[in-house]
Each structure stands twice: as C-alpha cells, then as structure tokens.
Image (tube, rainbow, N blue to C red; front, side, top):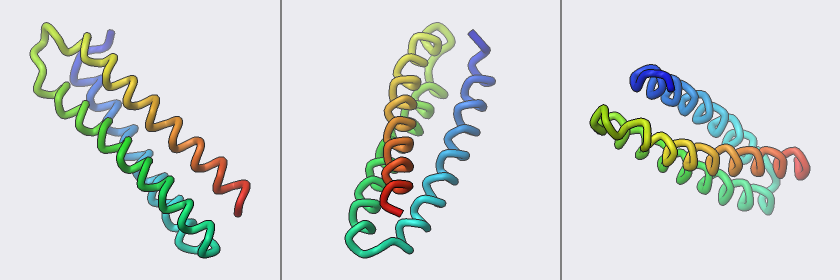
Length: 98
C-alpha cells in the first residue's frame, strides 16, 4: 500500500473535491421548488454527516502509529464508500426531480 502521507493527502484532496460538489448541489437545491428543496436539504445534510465521518476517520488515521495505520484504512474506505453512495444517490435524485 502507498505510504501513509500519500494516502492521507490523496483522501484529503478527494474530500475537498467532494465538498465542492456538495456545495454545488446545495446551490441547486436552494433554487429548487419548495417541496423538492426540503428533500434536497435532507439529502445534503446526510451527505455532510457522512463527509464529516470521513474527515474524522482521516484525523484518526493521521494520529495513528505506523504499525496500525494500514489496518485503519479499512474504516476510512468504508466511510468513504458510504459518503460516495449518499452523494451519487442524491445527485441522481436531483437530476430526476429537476
């Protein structure tokens, strides 16, 4: 596996990019119809919660000792997968409802 700092840097950069994408969806949600806006707001909040879980896992990983960091990446990856799934689901829903 890549070294620890490369992995953390890569995941941090990806997290920033996905945060930007959430901001874009949030902007679109504000412009949506009132009833759809509530659904969007709920989905966006879910994504933000999952994003924070990824960020927390990354912080834990940064503080982990060299002997355990690789085993901790599984938790980061699981949180990341949940976040991506929530984002993709929300984005698809936004496309369908306009």
